View: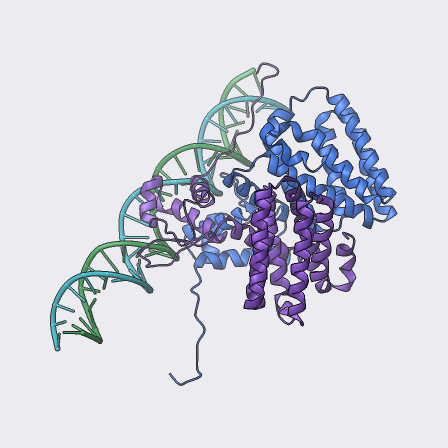
Length: 250
Length: 250
DNA sequence: TCCCTTCAACTGGTCTGACCAGTAGCCTCC
DNA sequence: GGAGGCTACTGGTCAGACCAGTTGAAGGGA
């Protein structure tokens, strides 16, 4: 070979990768939106001109990264869910159970980033954004009458709103993932919590204090309050032996 | 159905998911280390007692999350190439570029969790653990002579060590992922940083102060120092218009 | 007319068995 | 002893089959 002439290594690309790429691009481009349906596996077989196994390998990869979901028997075909949030939740879930992480790690992590999100929001949110938060709080108050389920959902919306006000989407996504993991781990126990009435009232009062601190721009106070409340809410579900992991953040 | 008796929804678990989980667990547990080989697909077929298609779907998912690599004709079988950490990095990367996140979000996130990790470590680390950290710092000092690359690597090891001392593996993994994303995004620019000599000295001095604060148990001071240093190091790479996202944490 | 049952036509999940193109090591043959 | 080919693997892909689940429309009974 003449000197100076060199070639780059070629990477053989597998058939299923081409399919994954095409679907990802369509989703990124907005051609496929959440809720949209892909053709059935057998139909994709003819569209991509490959065998069903190949189509399936591609779908499994897309599914494992949270972009689509398929359900046996669904005549509409695989569904695009495409929410990055669910991809993140999935990732966290995998990490958590492959590393055998427990409530302690998750709660500590949540206390850290949720309080930080609140503190950032306190410093960056405009008055009108705080007014939106005020509405979210009002929504919680209204939800008390509809029972604990509804209240809980409104509570989550409040927390999400605070996270969004931080302006950091990464924070929003991680928070969403870790929050849902915590809830998953303790959901069975949480359902039987006594005295929900008092719990809801206390939560409302706490959120009120947080919002006031945010209006006053007291970021450190928001941090403190957020950690304290999460601790009060969830610390009992952390095994005694690991309790110090979450106590240390108070 | 008698009132009060309720059942939880069952989630049908697909065969390939069980395989993915088992392999992930083995990797997480350290039974399978990078470089190790999995049995061939046909062999896995008998070990898991499923068909080859099912095995392949599992392998494709593992491959897409960066844990293994397979190559046709290789008599040794699929190769384990990475740990959970790299899977986390890969998925963070996917989120970051699908949501078009930039240095601002990443750096803010890193400042938050890295400072929190330091603060937790300050409160929880035993004297002997701090001594290990002392050695990591000594390693950095030694590395100065070997040039910036070596110093940088030793620096990362120091940060990793701090994260591990927090005792929260989730923190360690997220930190690793976000750190490597930040470095990826700015690596081209960072390479041309002038006056590396002074940079290394300043970094050493800072780490010294952090370690002293940890010994003194001054968790808040550790938080402050960590954020300040990260800001000094990286803030210039954040676009002017988003600079407030990271300034706000000082 | 309306509701309930049945059924047919799909779906995805899995299996079997086959063929091809690579790879690596052995084993000839020169 | 080295260069060639042979062989026994590997993963990549395909075709076709069966099952269980879902759905909606057709049909039957009230």
